[in-house]
Length: 264
Image 1 (cartoon, rainbow, N blue to C red):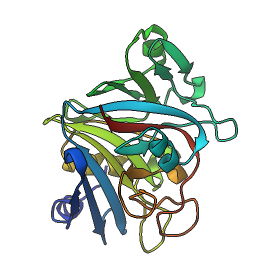
Image 2 (tube, one colour):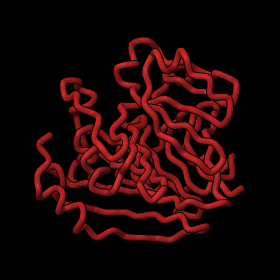
Image 3 (cartoon, rainbow, N blue to C red):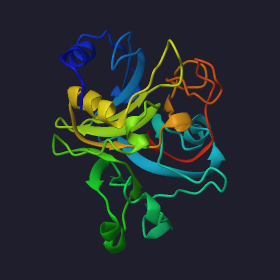
Image 4 (cartoon, rainbow, N blue to C red):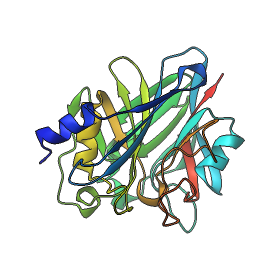
């Protein structure tokens, strides 16, 4: 998809500022001056396999990620999937236990080609389609559809560059798992000239592949892109959400759901 050798080298040779938080959760940040033809501001949270750490999807009235996270006593979190900004409900499938909270709007199945299923300490990233959703019978844990699905079993599965949503450089959020069973929340900021250019879906896929992704799913991006961790400076927000027009940690957008990890 046009990523160069220099892009790969920029990622692996970058200085990743690393902080080890409670329960082995690791925050990494890299500021790369020239990646995908512009400056990039990348934050990720690595979550190790642990008997004490569990996952869930929080459903809320429209609130900032930081507020929802604190209400659910989260250790770390990332914004969820696409939603109706006026009415505040998910426009992709959302299920909690036996309850189907929301279903995927028909015009979004081309984008919602993956889903995350979380139950206790396990995270699975799986393919999604209208047919899969119609037959889906998972009654334990929580499931949230999103997309596009970026990687499956170590292979890049996304291949459509014709959609402007995919090809335009935006702030992006994603979740991926590694062969070593780590779960990673990642954000790439954008819309900040001189500080953060943002990435296309192809570039996001390339970045995750270089970082060791095995299965990966794109989440809602743009102004929704928010990565949060308990005890971090200011309001716990690690990246630079774009809604306030400033390159700081204060520009969170109100959203209806997050993916989070907590101590059992």
